[in-house]
Amino acid sequence: MTAWRGLSLFAGDAVLVAAKDLRIEWRARTTLGQVLPFALLVLVLFGFALDANRPTLRLATPGLLWMTVLFVTVVAVQRSVALESADGARRMLLLSGMAPAAAFVGKAAAVTVQLLIVEALLVPGVVLLYDAKIESVPLVVATCAAATVGLAAAGSLLGAVVAGVRAHQTVLPILLLPVSAPVLIAATRAFADGLGTVAVDGWSWVGLLAGFAVVNAVIGAGVYGPLLEDA
Amino acid sequence: MSAVRLRGAVVLVGRFPALAGVDLTVERGEVVLVRGPNGAGKSTLLHLCAGLLRLSEGEGEVLGCDLGVDRAAARRRVGLLGHDTALYGELTAAENLHLWARASRLNEADVPGALERLGLPPRLRGIPTDRLSAGQRRRAALAAIVVRRPELWLLDEPHAGLDSGGREIVDSIVTSAAEAGAAVVLASHETGPAGGLATRTVTMAGGTLSEGLGP
Image 1 (cartoon, one colour):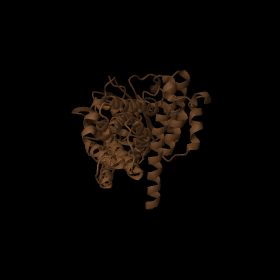
Image 2: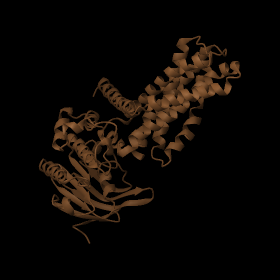
Image 3: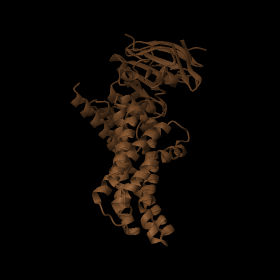
Image 4: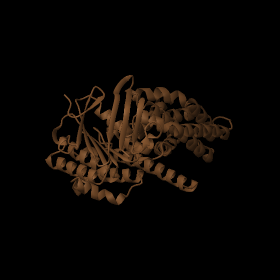
């Protein structure tokens, strides 16, 4: 098999898994019907909590936004894990002969798409609710892209780690939140630069986010097979 | 070459030996009924043969693939019907089968025929499988195996939850698979309807296997 053919099959399998997860999510309306209202509610409540001090709210906007995205990531990854756990469905992936790395990429891609949809509504949300002003659209877009891929990759990896644990719904946040701390820090700094609230080099933080994403994606693709078998 | 060849196979679930030294040979074209009480290790045996469990001790070969070396190679060539359906509940039966077929690089054109063969009428094929009855879901799960055309069929309580029409379909599928040269291993806690299909019966108890109907 040529390298090109192998790559094409890998990409096809990843797209198949991602499309399957997204189709299921679209039917279940979990992201649109539950996760998105939850995320907007969190933003509104943060606004109520800090509204008395408008300058503080403006300064805290990037952190509040990425904390909200982190909460949403936990919910999205839990759903992603649940899809494979229900009624022995992961057996389909195992018996198909599909490369486990392709399945991992597909599942992480589906989580990425869902998070990006949520962020596409949260960012205008903070502009409206927190009176934030975007000074660098490319930086904000690059931050969202790099941070989201990193969160989805780390989340999908840890989701596979805890899939076989009886109390995986409570264990996942305990593992994912600390592991995602670098994303929270870097995305908050880069976003703050994008909003012009802090004078830092946002692009260097985006570089860190991209590195985090690559490392987690590579590790996830490498260990997903054994994790899937042990779940 | 035998379809299944196990020698002293031990499978540990945690520290518990779910299989405690099993010897089993299944030839192509053979239908073997593994009979035994609940918890005897029948499902573990089928999962081992499907390449889904690690061999802790002993030797195992499925369709020429060494279970200690390359379980993944065996997986592609077996069909396993477990207690669960291995279907995505939010997807329809047809969508699940197309997904199976595409992921396994099989012919998607076989999907309508497989659903037809399992007696799932077209009006049910567009309904998410989690809204189907237990028997209909079981039929859809069997249809997914029919699409795979496995060389080794591993069916755990294949008649469970099916009406008489469904049981007849299972019997016909098993018979034609064996006639086509595939090996079939059926697991059941009773001899019952599966007994009539089997060319040989073995009995499991406490993670070990003996020839015949046992005690």
